[in-house]
Image (cartoon, rainbow, N blue to C red; front, side, top):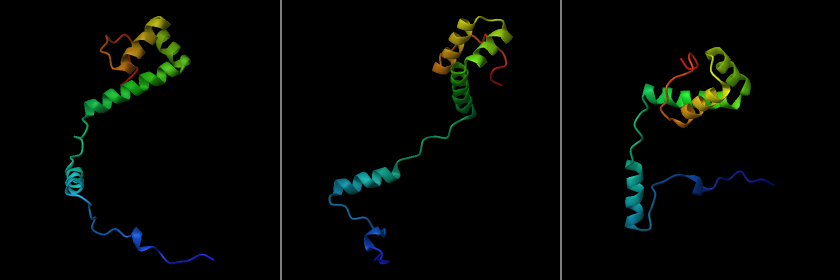
Length: 98
């Protein structure tokens, strides 16, 4: 009922291109460089944005940071929104991202 023969089409051999442009495009794609490695600062910025978004998504954490820092909830929300959008802002919340 089932055949155990494998198709030879699944084997990878040298690729044959229909036109020279196709071959050049494939070669250019293979030569394409990988993006430069990320630095520690890039990683910290991404993590702080993700953490700010998490705090904005959890109302109890937002209230906790507002109460611990003696800041109103709207000010705290505005601060974390700016951080999550990557807008430079004066740090009014302490010890939220170490």
